[in-house]
Length: 416
Image (cartoon, rainbow, N blue to C red; front, side, top):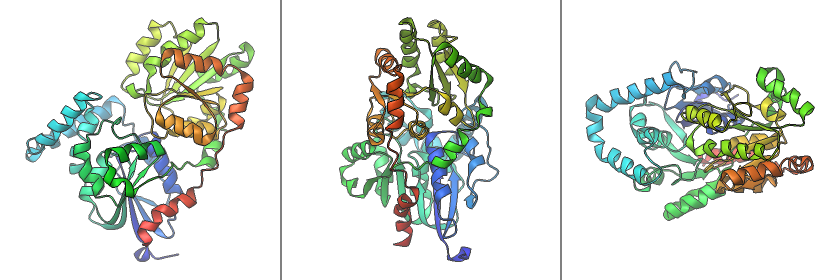
C-alpha cells in the first residue's frame, strides 16, 4: 500500500448530500475510485443530506459534523433561509454582490422564474468553510455552488466541472457563469445533448468538453431490489391485488417539483382510468409541490389511484415490483432513475425531451411520449400490452456501464 504522503489528492465538491440523482451517481463514482492509490475527499457546500450515510469507506468527508437529515423538509428550509440572511448582511455581502444578484434575478424573471436556491448558490459558495489543503485535482460534480466553490476557493493543479442538466433550462445566466467554466481544465457533461447545448452557449469552450455518462452501482441496485420487506404496507397490498384484479402499477421516483410535471401526470392518469383501464400510480419523493399535487389528485378524484409515498431510503424494491416506470418531466440531463429502472429490467415511459430521448436510445428501449396529459396517457395505454412490456424489458442494452474504464478519464488529470 502507498503511504498517504505519496498519494495524489482528489477533491469532489457537490451542492448538497440530499437524496437525488447526482448525489447517487457521485457516491457510485466514489465507490469505484482507487483509494489505495489516491487520497479521495468529499465536501458538500450545504452541510446536510441523507446521502452522507452512504459515503464509501476510504473517502474523507471534509464537512464537520454533517447533518444526515433531508434537505427538503421545512426545518432544512428554515435553517438555510436563516443562514442566507445572516451571511447576506454580514460584512455587507448583499450590498457588495448587489450587481450579481440583480443580474441573476433579472435573468431568471425573463426565463423560468425566480429560483431562490440558484440565486443564492454564490453566497453559499463564498461563505462555505475554506479548504487549506492543495489538491492535484478538484472536481465540481454539479453546476451552481459546487462549481463556484471549486473555481474560486479551491487550490488545485487541475479542475473539472460536471454538468447534469441542459444549461439554459436549468436557469443559469450565461453572462454570469462564463468566467467559472473558463477556469475549468475540462467540462464533463452526463449526456451528448447537454454537451451540444453547452457548446452552443459557449462555442470557444467546445474543445475542453466531453460526454461522461453517469456511473451506477448495478450490483448494489439489484441486491437492494430484493429487499421486499422494505416495501410500505400500502404498496405491498397493491402488489398482491394487482395479480388478482389484473391491474397495472406505475412508479415514478422523483422529487415533487415543477420540473417533474406532476401537474400533467395526474390528469393523464384520469384520462387512462376514464377509458376503463385499472391503473395505479405511485410516487417516491418529496418536494415543494406536494400540497399542490395532493390538491390536484383530489380534484381529479384519484385519491385511490395516485399515491404520494414520500421519500424512501431504498426505492429499488418498488422499481422491481412495478409494471412500468414513468419519467414524464419537462427536462432531464441524464435521469438516474431511468437508468436504475432499466438495470432492473423495467419498461420505461419518458417524455420526449433531449435527455430522455438520448438515454432511451442508448439503452435501445422505452416509450417516448409528448409532454401533455393526452401524450402521457397514450404511452400508458400502449404499455398495457404485456407482450410489449416484456419486449421492452428484455431488449435493454446496458453495455455502457464500465466504471473502471470511465474513471481513467478522471485519473489522467492527476497523472499528467
